[in-house]
Image (cartoon, rainbow, N blue to C red; front, top):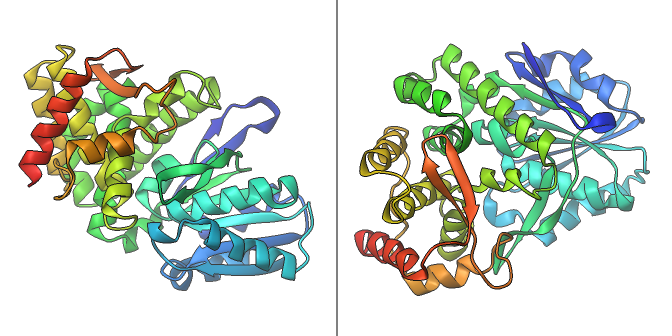
Length: 362
């Protein structure tokens, strides 16, 4: 087992990474300060992994909420089902919520914890690669709105993250690829050596070699923990973690939540960001080719879905948390391993990128 720390002073917390962690109650129990624990999972994950979590919580007053599976259920209505259960069971301000599942479960459970009785404790037990390397770490919580993804939420840090890599054994290939998008992102924005490593080990990751997956998860979490410790509330460098996300969120919203997985949309979005970076003269054609090659080898799409046009993209991209004073800000590449957040680009060049990709997808 590896243990990393998200250094936030008195609110610091560990990230445990390893095999069989769900069957080690000594990892979970010390992070539960009260007696009441609500486990939130979904209908896919609960039959697989709820039982060992129940066993680890023996002696606590426990209850469960089982949500439907899918991004389309990451809504205020679904959030209310968690509140209903907490109130029915008379959970108090010392309770702890445990998120057992992927990114949707983690985001919505974290938001419930941030807002129930003005804030209670929660723990992340991510069961997808994407959640283990990204969404479970850093305290971003929230739900979607029909007009924009993740537009309703709060920063609320977990007390611990338990990334049991055994849960990846039941992950389907599409979800594995979606998780690799976020792994690749760390190499592109701040860790060129990691990107080089990923290029050499993409086949191993796609074939689920345990050593390669463990290395990718640890290096991703280390990058995420360092960024969050330096900029918890995204006032500066944390925004770099959104490489490809402004394009990707537009894809998810435009296609309909749940049609594309988040990582699939981010993968296409990162390639679009690389294309725009090349058009601006910031990276060369060879770098864009490298980005496209590793995304394609990871089973990720390089084009947006059919039916997206530049005007629709721009409309949806305007509803983004990075938009400032009406100007779209994007995370773009200066080099492999170096990214910037900027609004300093010619809108006509952005439109050229959008037109190129939308025509290719038509």
